[in-house]
Length: 112
Length: 113
Image (cartoon, rainbow over the protein chains, first blue to last red):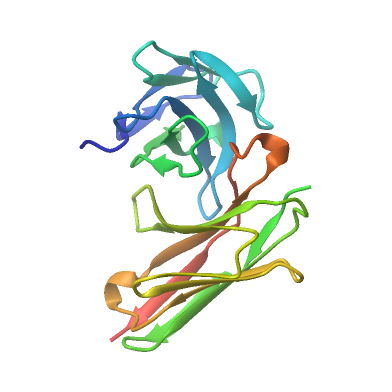
């Protein structure tokens, strides 16, 4: 049973560019959440997708957007990258109304 | 509002017990979680407890909840060097449909031989 997978593992971009990160949920899970973890900090909730719609959003600007596909996989898009967007981006999946969120290994984004 | 606080660092010797502490502010019924993060890795769910419980035990892990003081602790018995990692406390609440995890800043546990 594959767990949560994310791609790519690492990514280097320059300021102003756009980036797309990908996530496949654990088998049987239909809900995907995205978190940003800056160095030395706890993860911060970006948003959650369920039934291909954004169900909830944290305190992040509109430059952060997402999508969920019919197979429950998800993408996180960040436009107009800033140096401060450098972080580990974590995807978590859960079942409908489930109380457990399982995390993927993350994508390390570096903005130069 | 939601806020979770943890001490930053804990150092123990192999074989000792470790106790990692966390305080939270949400006053509603809530789920409280412990996650483990090893260097360069994602978060591993260790255990969780609902706020109507006082204690939960799972092998070497014991979670204690003091609802009155909004204090949560994770005790690791017979700590091993492989337990060295960052431990995050997190909560969800009915205000967000139990969907949004709010994390503390993490406690770095160092286990020395």
